[in-house]
Length: 490
Image (cartoon, rainbow, N blue to C red; front, top):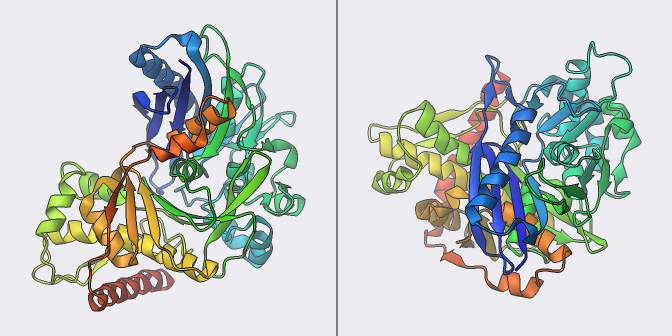
């Protein structure tokens, strides 16, 4: 029996999973890391802590699975995407990692707004501080300032940072899916763009080599834990890993991953289209000698809204309470939450929008606010799905979902009702790690694609809301969003 290690380095922590020769999960280990937030609301991670947690998670997972180490064939890595790391030649972090949620580079994006069309035309991504281009520019001005002139800078997303540290010969690469999210990568030439790098002030020599997602990225023994080095045969951004794990391999297939934030992706095949509705165009992956593109909408606060209910508002003790409470809410209550805690991303791209709770009445209480929080997740995803339908010209028939909040039946039914589409919620967990592990196993010749994806199981939700009710709820949401955007302009 051969085994595959899947690593998902996500926003809240690191997961390591051991998969058997049929693609089933044998054991999972989770290690959280600190969320470092200062008085300005800047969000950072410690790159060294993340790396150490990867080693720890892999050791725990392999030991927990009780498998022979010599039968581990390969590893695959999925990662939180736009989080940006700066390090030196020796692998020493030069600054805390800037997390994808962090808006500290907003001034840089504002400074470059006259070049927004050029940025979008070449990178496929609307100009925003959300993406690594602006974050790297900020690090050039702040993190790299004062360093010795001979310091060799290495910029990368978390995948390239981990690869650099995991490989003894310091391999400096990233995969096409992660590269396409930096706002420095040309989607048509499939290479770093000289003009974009100049615009953001990022030296091209400080960027990793961008290679296909099913490459042999290097070998590792996880700091001597294994008796021999194994190949890393897949790297994918976490949302791309989930798209692959969901089996969305054909044009027109759509998935939504509900995590801290959410990524809604539509596979659009080999044609690179242009969005007219605030969506990003990225590379799904580079596999077997070809690339697929995606339309994508990113949402800052989805699962994080539930965290806000628990940790900041004290309205729930655990995420599992939300389903019951939402079911107890007065259906006539008109409370609407817009969770623009760090602005609004797709399809609005309003970085200075402010969160608000509006439409409250005398019937608004704890249950109604919890339901409004769940509704806000479904509303945001619906916004992106509507934009995708307009850009692609095709009506959606199915939305495949995954992530912790996708277990919430109330949320999934609301998602189906508001988007007026069948929702298929994956019963399997950890789709991001699964996608990376499956790709590594396919690359190693251990798995067969048709057998892997035939085993996927889903819980189905069908639209049950009357059209008039759907239209009224969505109109109230759009009115609230407009208020959140106007608030920032005052």
